[in-house]
Structures are given as C-alpha cells and as structure tokens.
Amino acid sequence: MILRACVAALAALLLAGCGASGIPGPNAAAGVAAPAIALTPALNSAQIVHLTATTPGAAIYYTLDGTQPSASSPQYRAPFLLTASATITAIAIVGVQASAAASQKVTLSIPSGTLVWADDFANATGANAQPDPSIWTYDTGSGGWGNQELETYCAWNSSAAPCDPAQPNAYVGTDHTLHIVARETAPGVYTSARLKSQGLFSFQYGRVEARMLLPEGQGLWPAFWLLGNDIPGVGWPACGEQDVMEHINLPSPDWIAGSLHGPSANLSQKYYFPSGQSPAGWHVYGMIWSPAKIQYYVDSPANVYATFTPDSLAGQANAVWPFDHGDGAFLLLNLAVGGNWPGSPNSTTPFPASVLVSYVHIYTN
Image 1 (cartoon, one colour):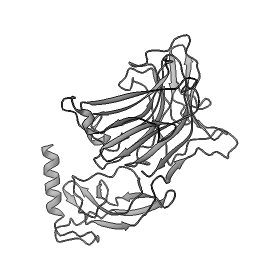
Image 2 (cartoon, rainbow, N blue to C red; image 1 turned 45 degrees about the vertical axis):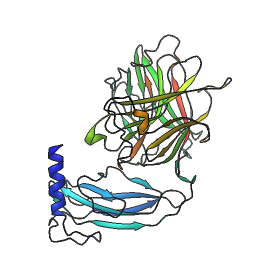
Image 3 (cartoon, rainbow, N blue to C red; image 1 turned 135 degrees about the vertical axis):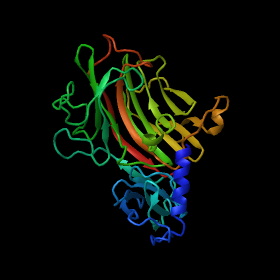
Image 4 (cartoon, helix red, strand yellow; image 1 turned 60 degrees about the vertical axis):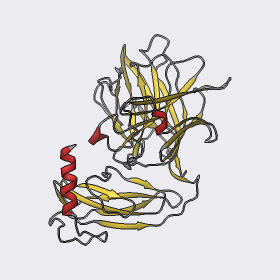
C-alpha cells in the first residue's frame, strides 16, 4: 500500500500541467505516449470504449468525469460499456513516468430499460460453432479452483487431455443456444467449461440477465456470475464477486441463490421456485446493479427476491463493499462438478449434463 501511494504521488507530480486535451504540460514524461481512445457501437446508441497504450509496458488509468487521472484512478483492463454521457480522460504510466492525458467527450441520452448489449448466440454455420471469441475466453485446467472441484475446464478446440475437441465442452449449437457441457470421460474424470469475458468486455451498473436452462443432479454446480476487472491487481475477494445465479444438486424444494462476496463480506439469499417450476425449465436470472445497491430477480425485474446494500454488511466484522470502485466487472458462465458445496457426483448424476443459455443481455437502469 505504501508503494502504491508513492507511485500515485510521483505520478501526480509528473502530471502537473497536463491538460485533458492531450497536450503535455511541462512535467509530462517525454517518451510515454498518451493512450488512444476509440469507440465502437454497442446497441441503441451505447458505446464500447477501447483504450490502447502505444508505449511498451504502459498501464492505462482513466476517469469518466473529465478529471485528471492518476495511478489511483481505475486501471483499464478491458473494453467497457458506456451508456451515459461522459468525458473519457486517460493517461499511460510506465514506472513513475506518466504521459499527457488524452480526452474525448461522449454525449449519450439512452432511456431507462433500453437493451444496450447482447449476445444472442446466433449461429448460421449449420454446425456447432465456437462461442464468439470477441466476447468469450476461458478459464482452463484443474486443481480444484479453490473449492475442491473435480472438473478440468476445457477451452474451445482444446486437445489437452482429458479435453477432446471432437466433444466440446462449450459450443453454440444450430439451435442458437450456448451449450456448456460437463462430461465424465472416464470413471471419476470430468471435463466442463468456464467461459468469461475477462479482457474482452466489461461494464459497471445496469441490468444484466441470462435466459438459462439448468441441469440438476448430485454434484452439479452451474453458475452465472461476475468478477471485478481489478482481480489481477487486488486478487479475490477484494475484486468483488457477484453471483447472479448459482444452483446445486437436486434440492427439495428447488432453489437458486444470488450472492455477493468481498473482503470479509458474504451475502446470500435463496429463491424458491413456485410449485410446478424448477431450474430444469427455462428461466431468466438477472441482477440490477446500481451505485450502493445490488438486486437479484428471477424471470422479471419486477420479481426482485434479494436487495443488498453496504448496510447489509452490518454485523460482518471488517467487511468491505467492493462493487463501486469504478473498475467494472466481467461476465462468467460455467458448470462445475463436485466441490465443497455440492459434494461429489454419484451413480444418479446424469452425464453428459448441460447448461443451456439462449442469451445474455444488458439494459440501462
């Protein structure tokens, strides 16, 4: 923490006199180029912001209110969704040397409830296809993932044993649906997939939802969730984890859970399905993310079953609410097998087991 404070202070000194126009002030570091700012369209006038450093080894820091960034500002780690007017201001830092600031004003007026980003898992190839590589990458490998899970996660087209490209664990079918498939490739050997948008797409605030059909069986653990973009720098749980939907096993009565995790902070609430419904049918699982408030719903944003705020952490000693840092978060979809929470599969567990996702959507609040 002391080192970070020193870097921030030195960077601030170096930035004295740098204006938002990108013209260097008298103390801007020669040889560190200002970042490039580019916008690409999302949906309904929303924009995706791309910041690019042209100086090798440079880290980019930015603000959205026109103020001068420093090493204490959010660090750019992925393209991010912009749905409201902003003045994007960015600097590049190498060591304690900082560039001049680049700046761009964006004017947006998007009504509440507008669809601004979507992956509808379209597939016109006539065969099973790779999930959009401009949105989705993968966590891969085994090792338990901190929960003593049993699966090996496989990327698209991976041939690293026990993965098999002829039997993909994640693909977009001709039914225009994402399939995440857990397989038992040999007795006690399991493969599956964990898709993530880390480094490719992120956002902060808005309403995000996925329409999903879940598998049920002992030891199965599907999830739709988010992690903070700053996880490479601060680790987990300081980055914050937002679990929009988790489900395990075949409970009775049937439920899913929405949860939040941060430093010394754990909040969770279950949603019990009405009679005649279950996660084995199609449902929409969503989160409404606002400053200092996160809500979870099933099927409709009018059907909120959990509301969490920083006040919800009362009674949890040293708990921190890490969801308003300005760093944004990325999306994850996965199907775990086994682990501390669900326990191991047994002879009743169906394999292959599949999570189906017909879309992931983001709307303005």
